[in-house]
Amino acid sequence: SSELTQDPAVSVALGQTVRITCQGDSLRTYYVSWFQQKPGQAPVLVIYGKNNRPSGIPDRFSGSSSGNTASLTFTGAQAEDEADYYCHSRDSSGNHLLFGGGTKVTVL
Amino acid sequence: QLQLQESGPGLVKPSETLSLTCTVSGGSITISSFSWGWIRQPPGKGLEWIGSMYYSGGTYYNPSLRNRVTISVDTSQNQFSLNLRSVTAADTAVYYCARGGIDYYGSGSSDWFDPWGQGTLVTVSS
Image 1 (cartoon, each protein chain N blue to C red):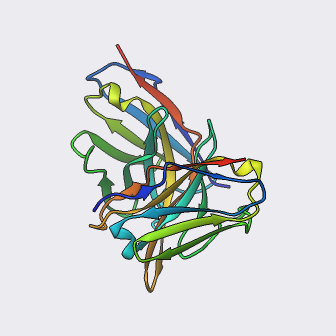
Image 2 (cartoon, one colour):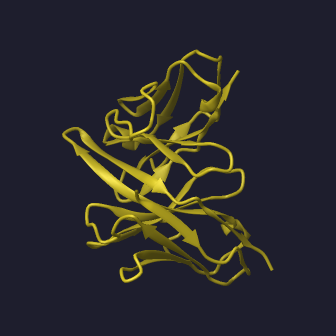
């Protein structure tokens, strides 16, 4: 399969924990990276590899992986976390990159 | 601090060629451990990888665009460029350039893009 599947939308109460998932056959071989995109802005890398955060990304964000599913979790959801989140990895051939369809996170 | 900036026409006519340039500042485009990629996002839709190039060799394209796209580099200007031929309205999108990287682990590898340019909207219309 050459697809990465994400739930279109997720909502979370302020201060609660939310988990976003990304499924794909290639994830049995490759890790994902995760991007946060706010309206009108470029995507920002928040997690890559096993569970690495670029400088400036709060430790409320964490990543994990099991089988064909990768997850992005952030605790203590804040209003500023409301955004679209995309997973990114390789396809099963390993030769091409692709993105998941994105998950819109709403903080209630 | 590495920064990327896209530039090019905001309006392209159908059947013509879309040409964009990404200028890299704060670092060299010739570092072999990184790739340089183009990603686009149609209005209201998700991200689509267009292609990536490695200065040390190798250019890789999205199979759905391979027949129409070329990514090239100009080391004298520290820039890389995107050419997309025979455009249609479906190519209307915000186009981003980004630095790519890959980390290797015993159990696999991880690709990432960071940082990204601010993006530029290209509209295909007559």
